[in-house]
Image (cartoon, rainbow, N blue to C red):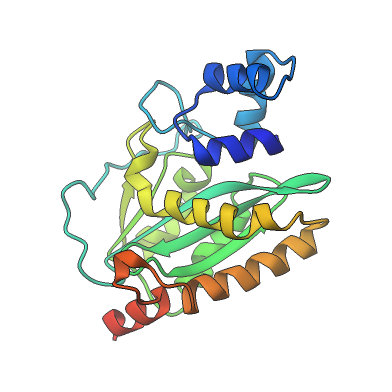
Length: 232
């Protein structure tokens, strides 16, 4: 899983067959596609190209249209989005969810969990909405985000709900870029021994990311500076 995580961060277009071939030919692991598929599903990894049956909502959950195509994003709190990623530990793994403002790349909230249940996603959403709220909130079609508990909060706040097209991870490109930064600039540099150590490391990283990390796309300003200057 550690090898798959690192390779997928470099090549998110690798599906089960290519990942299996890479593990066999490059890393010399005698592994079959069935095992690779099971591990990638456990880690929540999906390739970036379109294919049938990726993250799927639970039965009865409503799917909403993607609202961001050709939309000009020109201010903070116009669009927020969220996603879940796998974070490795020395002896296991956890899941990380983050909510990001598209205009500024500012991370509004984040939470970790040892399971893929929706509770930690709802907790992150409530914390993000404590002071501000977006016009549009974008997610993928995973059951955590299509649940009535999650979408109900957005509807109560009068927030428009947008969902990525099935199999289109690039519809949520800014969160994908955030995960790449988190993995290469923090997670892969520190082999977390425990959940508390991971939480502390991520806490420090997100403070750095928001307040100190300069973004070329933001004209070398920080996400926090751009967010609050635009939101005021």
